Length: 144
Image (tube, rainbow, N blue to C red):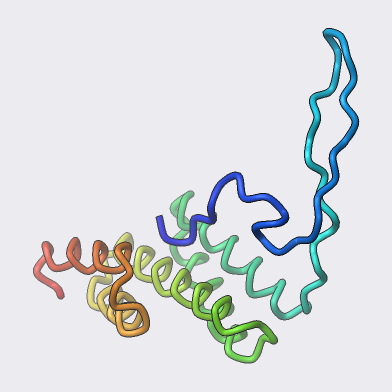
């Protein structure tokens, strides 16, 4: 779904630096050769806070704590505009937050609020399939 990062992406693909090969041992208890990446670049505290709030909101959404999901999404949205991040990262995070807030509103039965979140996301990314899907499902309820 939206917000799913590519699985199995290595450090090189993510821009995390060069990877080195760990030595392989032999025998039944041998360790496999694994890629060990260099430490991730340091991000600002505000960027990290936005990412953490967004991730925690996803967790709250998953466990059905919709009010706390909305709180974290709203707090992250307030901070994301001033966080020092590139525009692509800002846009991706903002879209995730709109979708998570929309989903929480749907679960709370606040369908007009959900529609507003999904439409705000759609205005920013009109070709995004997850956003189109959410709006289509909401239209099925007669709201959008």
